[in-house]
Length: 262
Image: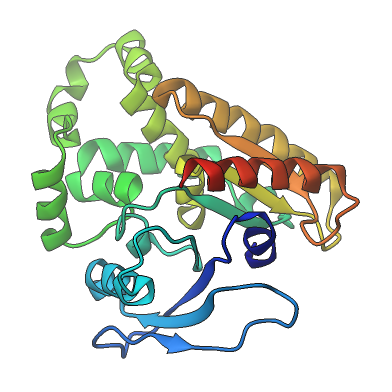
């Protein structure tokens, strides 16, 4: 993605790699060498502690910008719930390897049902599934920032809800968001809110597993898109292969995102 951003952006971007480090006690921005031949304005590595992500990410970005008003940054990190709302990202791209098993990405029906029951019974579980955040302090921040019908109220009334009413709730924008996240394994929760999802086929895998995963992800993303009105696209390609037809489509989409972000 760093290569794509460098080639598609009007100005050379910064590439920032966030590395989780439980020992990190503050913001530290480390310049690192970039790959030969990739035009970048700068290449950086930033360690972070999950508990301090809301402080470290904005501060690191502020330092790297260095008072430049308009700058393109590619922020790269592993799938970590603590990063999902640590900054007001302009666009989100979720990259994943072709799965070796469908259970790597999706919960089983039994697991999904159990997770849904927990979400409807437990406010903390609701926050974990929807926001990917844990702890009372973060829950307080969420409560101050947004107003949503909390699951404790749903749980109190669940005995009064008919099957038809529950289906109507799950087909609402909030219900669709819950149902979508419930289907996914925790590491894939941010997939549902990304502007585009890339399945990297650069490494060979089980074709039947990939086809099943693509089908299910397509259905899930379409469902979430209907609830929010946002466009989400799924790309299956080898980004390092310029001759891959899917790569050309991905590059065109990334160029659109970069243009929209200016």
